[in-house]
Image (cartoon, rainbow, N blue to C red; front, side, top):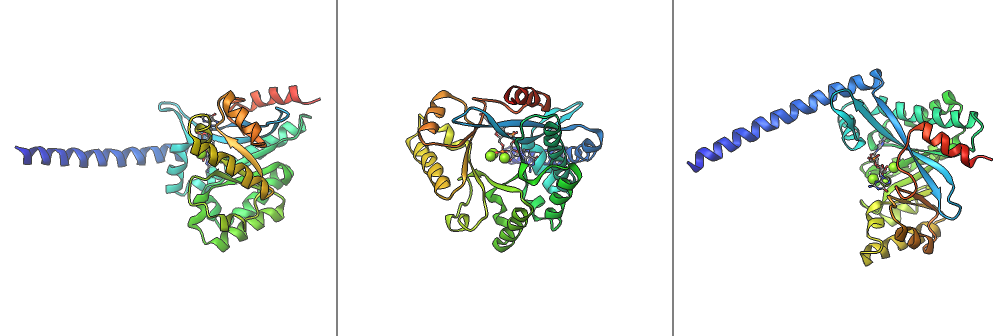
Length: 279
Ligand code: C2E
Ligand code: MG
Ligand code: MG
Ligand code: MG
């Protein structure tokens, strides 16, 4: 009987696995068409200067609205795209759409802000990545000083010399570089000091611990001081409440990105905020 059960379980598992693979394949097929059908879009989350309370930039965050499946998060889209060849066209679409949008705001006479774009490891690995960025800037007319690329510690899958070479390439175009989700993966401080970075984005997990976990709080403070002493500006991600703000003020964190100020918003909503901040 037990054996039978075990066998049934096995069958169940294997058909589940098959179902899972089919679902993945179907989702991949849907994603192929999403780009041309215009189902992908971007939300922009403001980055706010802690002292002045004013917006200095926005981060572009990918969204997918499928007619039947509804809204699909980047946590699903990006890994799926990375497994296929879709990451390059999708990554390029995000880059171009975000740069075009930023240029559009500037052409409307709104105050200029920085556009931060997430770059996945396989996108970064692409030998044409630097010329892709150059091409997008040329095509959209956005000045490089208004574009920032966000990379993560997952880039460590690449040869270190290759990472340095690519980042220097980006710097020479005039684009700035942020390290995202800082502190969550294999942060080697010895390597960090060799990277041509402009900004450090502290992961939400440390922010979450402010006010309730002494160790997280100590790490949050240490990350801010580390960033500042390396001459980098520091962004706190996922800030949601007043206590966190008070702590970050004391630690002199530069910028805040989080629901406390703004959730990710449509381009139109950003336009409205910028209008109010433009004299
Ligand atoms: P990320 O780059 O670290 O982006 C910050 C994430 O934190 C976003 O989630 C944002 O909506 C969320 N967030 C910001 N403030 C708060 C807050 O106060 N509370 C909470 N609970 N969440 C907050 P989202 O949009 O789901 O994106 C998740 C991740 O997907 C991003 O993390 C990024 O790694 C990736 N991603 C998003 N768009 C793209 C893209 O265009 N390309 C690539 N390669 N990755 C992307
Ligand atoms: Mg990011
Ligand atoms: Mg992050
Ligand atoms: Mg994250």
